[in-house]
Image (spheres, rainbow, N blue to C red):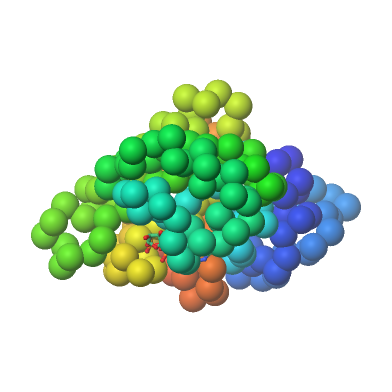
Length: 209
Ligand code: AR6
């Protein structure tokens, strides 16, 4: 039960059903199964700081210079330590819609996948395609690494890059569903409760015919 292992270390968090999850693992691991969501047992929606998650890999919302910055990028660099920036300096950069993988250094996660989402410029500049590509490339790198079974994503491009949150949630969850059979658990890690609610609603809607 991979989910039990990392929920133990994450607090506060919310479950897909909206209730708070216990900080300690329940006596019966089956308590964490979601009977309301049998179609997507491997997609977990969490309200949490992604830097705290002891998953195999976390995904960063990076910029094409791989130069660090604010938002989740800044938080990941601060938590990982300066070795992360040093490893990234080996790369000339990364095109929008693509990603690179590094070690996680002082993070609980063993790897960081630095994905470059698009800057929102009104919607007519391939933004949706590029955001899909950022997610799909992250999954591809994770698979190629070979030992990554659990992976967590922030809501790429929805902060300073300005991508509309509802459309971004649809794109993120569509990519996660495409790849869910390749991993033991995929976590959508949202930094605020309203975004976590949006993801829950979007996932529920996708199940309707
Ligand atoms: N854990 C999870 N999610 C977080 C965290 C966190 N610790 N901190 C912020 N978020 P952003 P972008 C959420 O702006 O829009 C950087 O400067 C946040 O609420 O971090 O892709 C880079 O260097 C939002 O929903 O990334 C780039 O230059 C989401 O993460 C640029 O920002 C993404 O917000 C990338 O912009």
